[in-house]
Image (cartoon, rainbow, N blue to C red):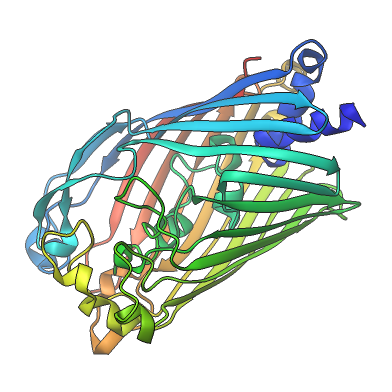
Length: 430
């Protein structure tokens, strides 16, 4: 039983899907002599965007269709895992994430606010405590986790490590409409029984003051305070099935109230009249067999009282740290599918060395502003995107990625092609 609990702990800390299984296998030997586990993942990317980065590229597209390209280097994520097995079913896990290679306060140009420069302070700056929890395991089918945890709604949040997707950056659709990685403080009950894995979470609610027209609820889990406001609550549920060899099918969802989940709590204010109900449903799958990897997801979200958000007190107060303009959509969606084939599987010498080379293609469609709130339209938020490229794995824990992608917008606007190259790793050091 002790060995089972230890293995489950490593799998919980570790990477999901096939990468998760391999990492868990590779650390079993060290777990016999050490209760401590250390790991992480990171990525460094270069992109050249062959479209305008001007603030009015959507409001005046004709004037910017011939603007010069622009490029950037970035370190989107550098993550350190730490875990410890106290024994008797008690384990601890934490994950510290450095986003974009920096920390503290950053300047951002808010396109949705006419190109105004803003000094943005996110919770913890750009260094985030993405996980911090204690867990008691009673059996493989019954585990309770308390602390700061990942909310596994959608494919991207449940499988967000860089070996879990082909594109250089995280899949764009889910990364636009939902928090990514979505992490909040709460309580989780999870387990695995036969071919099913399940998880139910009770969480602090999202904050409607952080919702936007171009990102829907993407920043709703963040708090500018030193604490997560919990005047309102939310719940998340995920179920995965592994009945078919090589295939995982998942269903996930979220429900909670978001209006009034702010500081200070005004019991007689908007929160007493409006709820801001957030409901999300998602289905996703991963197929990994016969030298193919295929992944797909479909997400749909609903936001109640969306028309009221623009007029909330914190959004009208220019000194508040919240979003101050633009309507928010009552609906959002994201669908995507990608497929890759390992061509090195047909070359015996490379296959024996453990090298892999996937050629892949991806298509997705998403819109964070799918309903025209109060008749206001932001048509540039409706995006269809295709990408194709390669993933080369010289060893299992490292990948070199390259891709060409293109966003297709409505005919009024200019399409947005780009080329990206990246390198990433994930695994355990101890």
